[in-house]
Image (cartoon, rainbow, N blue to C red; front, side, top):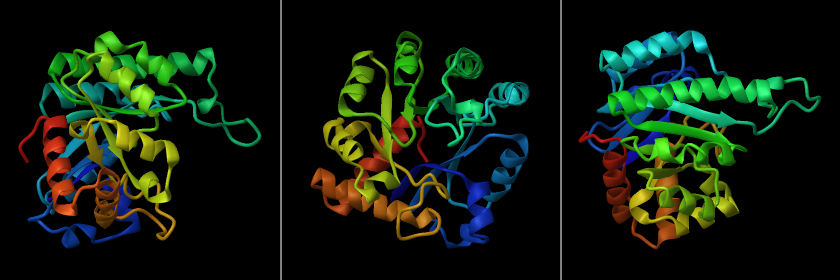
Length: 260
């Protein structure tokens, strides 16, 4: 069983129409994310054509749309989502000319991202939902929420960007954390591979982030690239592919608090 801890169905459909018909019902499970009501509705339609799949909704830090907050709150209250996310902080880069201000780490942007994150954190605590985290160039900010995050049912770090010491610091804060690895392991990311080898195996997930972050040999990331990611993880952990699939599937179920 291949378990993809993070992908975007509506965006993938745009690049690969008809992909649901090619996903094998018997050997694939996944968790899809949405960030606006239209995307959520389309993803729900696509889920009807797919193997058992989880679905979450979040206010992404790259575009912290406060106008979607009420929609997210209603999804939680009506038990229509399996997790919250992506939520978090992102100050990775601005445009080359410095005009794109959303990624600049200043007081205004930090305040906007804090409001969105804290809103979602409170919902996760209130409804007992897993929280999927997107964080870049902001680990110090996130770690300051250690006490609150330690009370969340589970915290899933999408496409883990940190190093082994940061992962260790998160686990020392008694956060029920899982660290998801995607296509960067196919590109030989040194710090990604170092983290993969250092993090406890029962805390590791695999993802594609399809269609984003494509490997060098593809124009976009497809759902099928979960096989390549899983094989790379198996190699780094000195596991057979069968053993890696079993480990990652069990971790997927534990992280998302589900039995799919």
